[in-house]
Length: 325
Image (cartoon, rainbow, N blue to C red):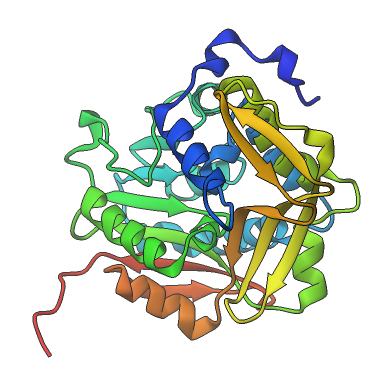
């Protein structure tokens, strides 16, 4: 059962200065926008896990099926004694598949939602009692200090769910290069990337009939009201999912259904009817696009699995960077 906001622990109301800065800056823009990473308070994390089980949301089923299929060959490709480092671990529902396959020496889940991270880490530690589970609460868009216990271990990064698609291509390349630096030369990366497909399938995945994705999007406004003393009339907003063909991405917006005025930490804002707050992008990649993205981030693809062709999982390696040509 999903929690309501009233069920959140007191610690969850702590305001991150970066959250405040992003909200204030984003609402001040001509085309208002707030980074998608701020979806993930406790309630947002739970709603996202509910989204992954929806019939319209194909990425989770597609990626899970691929991981189960490749399990026998994955262990031989990644070697023994690795530390599995998962970026944006969430509830880690796909992680047991990989843990059973490669039997790592340690598991390091990284997530911005601390309460959710610790709960998931405790569950996995109980399921794999001989495995050191070392959770790191961090926003992986910034430098992430890995635990000292894994410093000398070979590392396998795990970045499932096509989360890389939530970033603009420039930011995605920057993050991939940062991951390469954090994990080190010789590290490997197992990454899920969603493919371009028909508009109807894509839009439905981000605008489900049950309204769970809408609740997930609107929860961002609830978080602003709770943590930043906001007076946003949430009932004056509607969730929208759009396919932007030029940019090859799904966009999520919060559209004002009427003219409104509100305050956030005593700063006044107004929005006209049909004006939106842009809250998320989910870029989709063609086969060659995905490989080029990885190479631009310093990773050499070594194997790719695509299931029915709608979603792919790529294993890449941090090889020495070429000097020329």
